[in-house]
Image 1 (cartoon, rainbow over the protein chains, first blue to last red):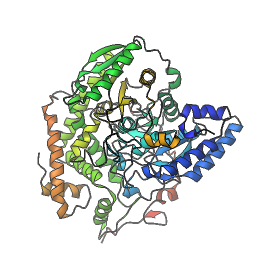
Image 2 (image 1 turned 135 degrees about the horizontal axis):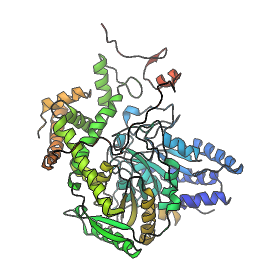
Image 3 (image 1 turned 90 degrees about the vertical axis):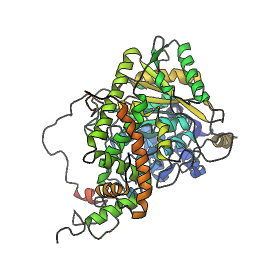
Image 4 (image 1 turned 120 degrees about the horizontal axis):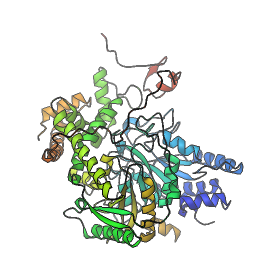
Length: 494
Length: 95
């Protein structure tokens, strides 16, 4: 039998439909591959026995003609989604021993559609980071290597375990969450496709919260079509999330018509930043050319407040995180370090439970929300956020989608870009503005850097118009014809 | 914008995170750098701009005020570091 881990999600579903192989076959292949690539540290918790049980149950359902959208497909779950009976850590020491009594809505939707869950993937602690180097469970290693040296590279973050797993072919697809770029940037760094849908499209219920006005679940897979299948299964209204939107979920696969004639593609001049590398500029121009060749019209647009998106994000996200993470108090769940009195217990528990980056963000958030600074920082940042949102509203008067690079560079080595927190924050310069505006976005692999690493292009769309994103991304994917594989996966086959 | 060691100690207390004296200096430098970078927001003219509170233009849903869940006490305390007879156990807080 051919290596079933090399299939796309769509091919895997088709193969099970035509009885070429069973869910148990393809699940077993993935479990074997997970053992082989354990060194990537992509999973915090692997659940092979559970996966085989689920695969068996799926095969039985299929035999009875019950076939869900993800029927029998082995998929990885970011360890931020609560899963009943399976430890959920948010990559933090403070949730080291947390076994949820309930399942998040998104994970439940996927189980209802027949998903087989392989395990819980690693991430930056509480999804705070852009390189997956803040996890309490160790760094995740990118399956890709650059030509110039053999150093271990980061898989992007925060959903670095999910991106590495899909890239290394140890999951057909994976869930992620995106607060400021945590799906799109890791997808770009690992040569795969990832979509952050519109804020409100997927339920946040049961997802460990970071910054609630920004957090949004989404997916990773190796093709645009596979992401359409994933989002179809994940999305939908949920009364348990007060910002979930009660709109019907369209048929995303059907949206991929391949016809973008007359589509207006906006290219924002503010994203052409000083110091942009030639290879990023080139890949961006390739994207423009591909869409133009397919009959789209290119429109110059302006998003004038782009420059201020990161700074306002680093007020709003820490403010919300300081409030959300107040719940970790050593009383109801998670770690407890005993103290002389209640306050002492709280302080010792939180000092031992949170890592450095999480602490920094809680402290910044506490500062900008404290008396005397609330207006100067928090309200100021929310006003700037309003202007950023308005920029997108204005831009979508002139265009249907927006094309930009996903990140300012390809993957870097573990330890690089680590001189100070702000250097790391700059990774998200192209992804944060759309997060601040709640707009949907996808990253697709568009080519290789001079050093042999994947580079991504980002397409942003109007709110709740993921259909146009899938349609446009599908055209771009075909033109880009990105067939490179990480060397370790390629060598495995050889 | 400079955040001195006293301010770090004060916000750490507000956030209920124990910070040792020998950690204050490093945090003071890091947080000051971040806040100085955030200062760039003051360049933006926001006169007359309403702060954005939600990116989705919607009213919160309402439902009838009735009990729809409950009876799951044991599940609620299942992950507690210390519980007794269905209660969370904490340090003595009343002398």
